Image 1 (tube, one colour):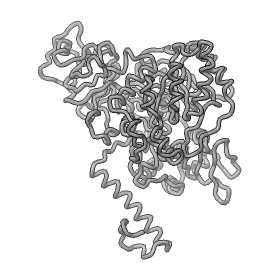
Image 2 (tube, rainbow, N blue to C red):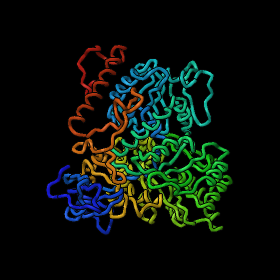
Image 3 (cartoon, helix red, strand yellow):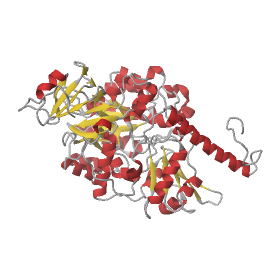
Image 4 (cartoon, helix red, strand yellow):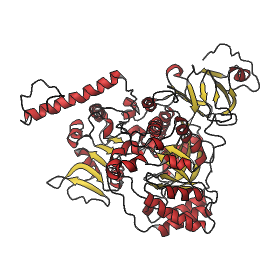
Length: 622
């Protein structure tokens, strides 16, 4: 972009990229604000104003005018299933951001019509019934009507899944199919599966059913992952810590990001964890991995960060708040072996732990090992989630040198949590302020993609406002954070979890050139609008990896989405919407239209007084 007043003059030390006329929040307490910066070889060389960067503009320097917009350090999602998400991204129909079930079903119907025989339509994560104007799930009948012949799988949080008839056949569920442990196949009066699957309380039934769907192979995996990373760049993400997870085997499922890293085609920095997949085999897996690699092996783009988020399957609690807290059996003996093995070999780890009851049991194991000098030992370790962690447990975490990572899971499951545990518990779930007050590193993430959306601004809005997806206030004012703290949790704190805080998470000379120019000013936009912020220009390692509006075309070209019938090729990913008057009126109109259809259906069956074609006023006719 030609910029008046900046005449190329540098020869030997010319910058590759200069961004000027910005309102920069650097995250660096030594210089918190600036207007311009220069980048060379993927690293920031100058932070200041126009006169500071002018001497570094050469004939080949790309100069971008930020037009006075807010610039921040690139965001870092501290708990994102990015590797697994990338392998499946182009196969999934995203309802993230869709405001009405009517629109969601229309998308599903259209996608089913183009999906070839043998493939499924799958809606997996990023949405909740509470986001719809209709405030409900789709019914099995609606899925059957939208896709009579194409298998449809709709996952709802950690709680349930809705399948149409074709998906039940494809998954092999019949009258004689037994319920798996911890799950329920809902059946009708005739004993046949209805199409509803319930996590009772384990979500394994949901994920094992999804695993029956076809997967991508070969080059399609690379294309899918590259487009998923571009979608993350769209929201200003430049780094993520991959939390591994079920059905993500090492090394085979990591091959795609490894190949992309070798080719220089990653647009997001990834620090990954290793998660033993087979119950009873965890110690053998960890032992083999310790012999193969060490944490921090890799480079600035792709690096190993440790084990987790499970070390042993028996120690994992479930996060389905529509069900009672699970009572775990004895797991300490094997769990202690796993932790000892990691600590003795210099490996860090992260642990999925939803409830304080689990955290207390884990801490007791750590304290036993601390008596032998294994804690604190410099290994980076942390608890993930921790919605009900107590003040006493946080004191123990601090004494043992641990950290915390929180996610906006209650943005999607807040009402279920409130109904089960009450408003007092919901006000403190998770107790973010208590964590910060103890000086703990507290990083933030999304836990996308199977439940939460990958949009970090939704999580940032949750951190600041304490509201859930239905706009219900859950967290108390004393347990919310200001905007600067929330941003730090999504930048510097994540870098601390990977030992990169000296080079990542702030905008200062010597740090990675990872930044985002925002559509709206995070620090001044009205609170409800935080969730609607996007990046207009995202830079990772000095490369422009996403560009929109005035900057469209400055980013790197991607291959087309394949396969051509992909939902992403037609609908994209996150469905952006603003709560302006026009959109609100459209949403209400769609909801009222569905209500009228429902009223007419009742009238035809004699369930509502009056004729089916009578005038309908939804405010007065019941």
